[in-house]
Every structure is written in C-alpha cells, then in structure tokens.
Length: 218
Image (cartoon, rainbow, N blue to C red):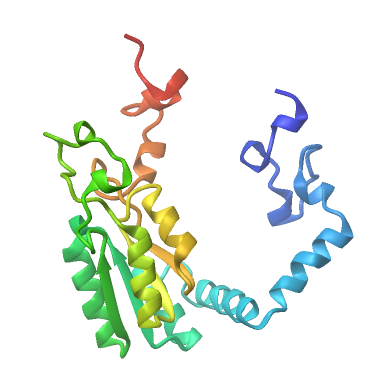
C-alpha cells in the first residue's frame, strides 16, 4: 500500500492522543493546515455544538469506567437540559426499549417511542420484490426509519435514542432526525447485539471475516 492508502486505522503511533511520539507521513493531523484547524474550532464555538462537546467531555471524565452506556445517556440528557426523549426502536427490541423508557421516566424525562414498523407499509410499495422476504424472518412490512424520524420531529423531541435499528435504516433515521441522536444498542442478532464480539474473535471463530470477501472459500 502507498502512503496515500493509509489512514488513522493503520496508525501505530497514535501521537495525536499521547503526544509522545512522531506523526506518520500519512497522518491527517500532521497535514492539517492552521486554517482548517481554526475552521473546525469555530464550529465548536456554535452554542449547541459547544454545549454538547463540553457536556460529553464532562460526563466522560466524571464517570469514566463507572457508568454504563445507559447511565451515560441519561446523565448526558440531564446535563444538556433535555426534557423530551425520543426512542427509535426496532420491533424486535421493544422489550429493551420499554425498560429504557421506564428508566428515563424514573429520571424525570418525558418519553416518546416509535417502532420501526410504524405506518405498516408493505415492502412492495417501495419496490422491494416479494421474493426478497417470502419465507424469511423479516416478513412483508417494511422498516420505516424516515417515518420514525418524522414522527419524533412532530413530537418535538429534544434528543433521540436509537435502539436496534438495522444497518442502513439507522442511517436514514440519522439523516431525517431534527434532534441530536445517539445509539444505545447496535443491532446484531447473531451476537446478542454486541457487534464488537466479531472483531474480538477474528483470530478464531470469525476468521472468515479476514478472508477475501469475508467468506470461506468453497
């Protein structure tokens, strides 16, 4: 690979974090111009951006290795002064969303949840052929992340939390949500919604992921 093909994921120095080494030739920090750096810093000066960045840093510092992701989410929302929390949930994780809603309400928040099948629209209405789902688990009703976002926008939520939306569906929700969004649960049906487990097991059970195309040779 040429130097231009490398990026931060290929770095072993991580000098941007510790500042005790040198920057590799391909390092974006080393290539950053003063104008570019200042332009980004100016964005952190915008009121909402500034509050979010400072609050996120404070929650991280105050509860590092102490709070779970659930607790961090509640604390961040509290410190930001959010009152109405939206939950964009997968229908398959409704129970988890119910528990999270109970936690939020116990902490004084108003909650509005919208499930992915809201609207009950048939997949064929957006051009998904029946053979793509007949006889398979998902069924004929499409996931509708754009509607989820629109309904939460209509409710005027201050902050939205994604629980288990499919890959791509979550992207559409982020795109159309007017409120800031965080993800509490990333869906992974195989690994109990712990997608990082596949990365930890690439040297053994999931070694196929490192093969060309991510598949075993036939």
